[in-house]
Image (cartoon, rainbow, N blue to C red; front, side):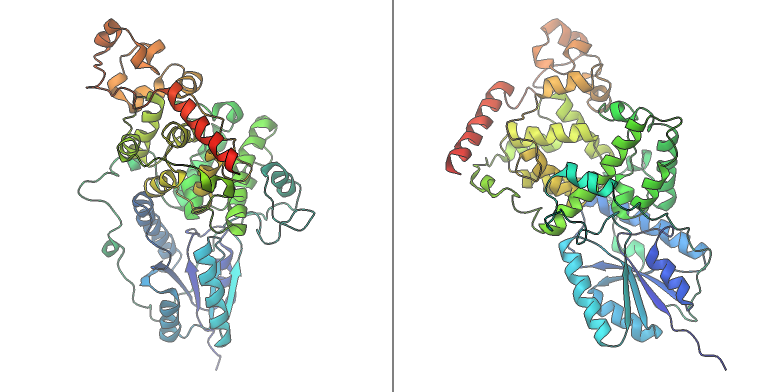
Length: 479
């Protein structure tokens, strides 16, 4: 009589994929039944609305993939420890595996839970997969964390090559009886009235297959010319992989290795530039790991003395894409329509909120967290602080983007603005980024009535710039 191998619980989190999922592969190699579970943890706090939409479709895709391999995805809500203990008791599992996560709340949960379960005689294993590096291990020569991006990039690029991505398991051994699961529909992750996400599916297909398709399309297309093209929002010149990476539907190792062996037909500068963007995400997590309050407190505490304005009217105009500056409004409306925004435009709209309106970067970070499908605790916080000048290796505060010049430089023909600000569609090219300077006949010809069909600027650029520099000078005097 042979002894049965006890089941293994695989706890899915930010790793909603079968390929290159080291925790899942370890569970399969264990030899017993595999019980995949996703827990909607209350301690993790609520997701933003856009990410809830993404999570619904991503979990549906993961569930389908698991079923094709002979498995099933168990859904549960509540305290992770209670749910895992209930599953262990119900299934007789003696092992729990997961892939590591690096947000402060998640790390604290995992550390405590791993110790408690091990103290009870269970096997608990964690694996890498969300990042290319382990933030606790990659250190400067002096033994501390990196604070500047370029040395970090050199250390990671010059270090050990990321592991070759592992294939998805062909089959999963099922338990004799599956634990009960909550229904995904009961989580009510999708918006209904109104369905503000109705256009998201025009460009997004959440799930592992969608991630692989996006990567393949990028490698075959936009990677060539990426170094220059990535700055122009009207061009299809970016990878669109960020929400897939945020949900863990594809591993950064898989993305990294997809760029190998391409130098015969793609310029090395394009490949290097794209890899640097992947490593910037790593740098953001490195910062969050070593500065857990990155999303709440200034990295550079001299900015604690900065005098932010409480201006709800201007903030609302910014969120709605009604500032009177077309490149800013186009970006904010793209965010509403598709849950994303071109990276160059993200910098422009963030600079506008922080420096033209003098509104605290934390309000912008929170808005992005709720509205971006790729909202990420590390990248979102680090990037907002970078624009504000308060972050690590940040852009100086006195670097204040002129939204007119930025629009003319990176959307010269106005195609991006015309797409997302259709009321300016017929305006002449030379006025598309500054309709408030257009003569009356040009406005009339285009059907534009400033203050009615399109807003007048909520702030004068020149005066806003002077005000911002004065506020910054006041901070410098006190520090």
